Every structure is written in structure tokens, then in C-alpha cells.
Amino acid sequence: MANVNVDWSKLGFAYQPITQRYVANYKDGKWGKGGLSDDPNVTMNECAGILQYCQEVFEGLKAYKTEEGRTVTFRPDQNAKRMYDSAQRLEMPPVPEEMFLEAVDAVVKANKDWIPPYETGGALYLRPYLFATGPVIGVKPSDEYQFRLFGTPVGNYFKNGIKPITICVSDFDRAAPRGTGHIKAGLNYAMSLHAYITAHNRGYDENMFLDPATRTYVEETGGANFIFVTKDNTIVTPKSSSILPSITRRSLMTIAESLGYKTEHRPVKFDELDEFQEAGLCGTAAVICPVGRIEGKGRTINLPSGMNEMGPVLTKLYKTLRGIQQCKIEAPEAGWVHEVK
Ligand code: PLP
Ligand code: COI
Image (cartoon, rainbow, N blue to C red; front, side, top):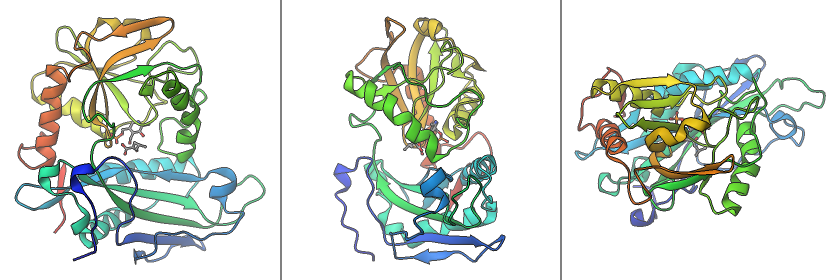
């Protein structure tokens, strides 16, 4: 039994080093054999590509304990594929899907004591990432890379759990049009920080990014996609080539269809937000977090579902998604839940 010193009742969303993480290196044009390491620190050259030109991509997924004590992950193959695409966009050698999935299983297996017990509602958040370790001074891709995957036990992403949050549109865009917003690269997150802090300083929980070309359409926040519910219970999610293709959002749309809801994945104008009944954020970390108020373009939109609790349709989707992840409800498609033995 590892020395696990966690107060499960106080889990938020913070980093805490766990016993073992996975490390693999890319050198001389090929991936070396990866394995587990006790060392949470990374040492690299001062001129490493990650430090100079931000060559880094990452993923986020969770491992859960079921009520019967089984250990499962949710759609890890989708994270492997997305990280493959992200790496290609940043001219990095993609991590082969088998290595990615092996790393997920190895870290979960080696750190089972760090997975929050079922009753806590928490999870072991897993962070796979790939970064340039080789020195580069001219602007070009590095020759050497490292792939790591660590975990950290987490509870809710937002401090008030799943109470509605507030959102505002700040003056700051994240990515340029046709940039890298559709991939999970650390540089996108660095570019989102100023907008996030500006929103925070104005008393809002999160910032809503609009499309940077016209500032007309809803994109996403710094760490989650949007999901809306119309007054006649249609589920709508914004479509744009510069937002992250959220695995949670895609799963929720499939779940919604299996429950008989109509779904629309289409461009969403900021000006139509007051036609929605419910709004929420969705993502691995956020799961579904309801949004009660949105401010921007000189207007404030108070969602009819209010600031007290999640609305009924998002609650139904939330419970179904969590039920699938807890192996209590059958997934609408095969292969969503992967058991780690
Ligand atoms: N959008 C951004 C910018 C994110 O960081 C995340 C989190 O991963 C999401 C959306 C949600 O994606 P997923 O549901 O795959 O976690
Ligand atoms: C996730 O949901 O996995 C994210 O990456 C969001 C955030 C913690 C960066």
C-alpha cells in the first residue's frame, strides 16, 4: 500500500504528486521503451524546444473506482487519437496509440490507492503530455522529445461543485483565426490566461471566447466546451474549427440522442444566447458545470434555469454520463468504458 495521505472529503482540482508516472523518450528518430518512474521532476537543457518555442501538447482523462471496487477509464483511445493529431500539428513525433494506452494502464495500475473511493465522487485525473527536450535556437522542430503521464486525485473543477457559474466575454482572444485552437497544446492555455484573469477580476468565474475573426460566434472557455438546451429541449453545441473537439461533448451528444433528444452541432451566435433555457460547460475536468449568467457585448443574459442549480435536461445528461462512467448505466456504444485489471 502506497503512502497515500489525502483527505478525500476535501478534494478540489489541484496537483499532488502520486507514487509513479510513465516516462518515454524519443531520440535518433525513434521512441525508446517507456516505463514507470518514481521521480516527479524533469531535468532538461536550457535551450529545450519546450522552453524556447513551446513545443508541447497534452491530454486529460480520468480513472474511476466503481461501487464494486473495479477500476475503469473512460474512452482513453479518444485521448490517444487526439494527442496524435495535436502532435502532428506541432511537428512532433506522435506517441503511438499502443504506447499511450499502455502508459494509461500502467500508471493507473501502479497507483490504484490514489484513486478516490467511489463514494467521494472523485477521480484520478491523468495528464499525458509530450514535449520537446532537445535544444533548438533557430526556429525549427526539436530532434528529441519526452512523453510523460502522471496522475493526481481530483474532485470538482469549480470550487462550488456543480452550482451554476457566471461567464463573461473579455476583450482578449485566445488564438488567431485558423490557429491551433482545435488541438490540445499548452500554448493555447497560456494564451487564454489573460482573458481568464480579466474575467475573474471582473467577478466572473470564466471567460467565453468568441471566434477571433468576427467576434460573433460562441467558441469555448479556456478549459471546456459549451452545451446549450433550447426551450423545446434540443441540445445545441457550438461548431467551430478553432475549438477543442471535446470527448465529453461528443459523448454527451450521443447520450442525448440515445435518450431521444434532438441534437444540433452548429455555429452558435452570441446574439442567440437568450433563446436558450439552459447552458453549461462540459469537459473531462468540468464534467458538466451549469452556467447561470453570461455577460458580453454590453448585455447580460440570465439563463432561465437560474443561478441556484443545474437545469433538468443537463441534470439528466450529467447523471447518465456519470452513470456510464460508474458502470451503472450501459454506454450507448461499445468500448467507452475500459477496465484496468
Ligand atoms: N476545451 C478545452 C479548451 C479543454 O481544455 C477541454 C479539456 O480537455 C475541453 C474543451 C473538453 O474536452 P474533453 O471533454 O475531451 O476533456
Ligand atoms: C480537461 O478537462 O482535461 C482539461 O484539460 C481542462 C483543464 C484542466 C485544462
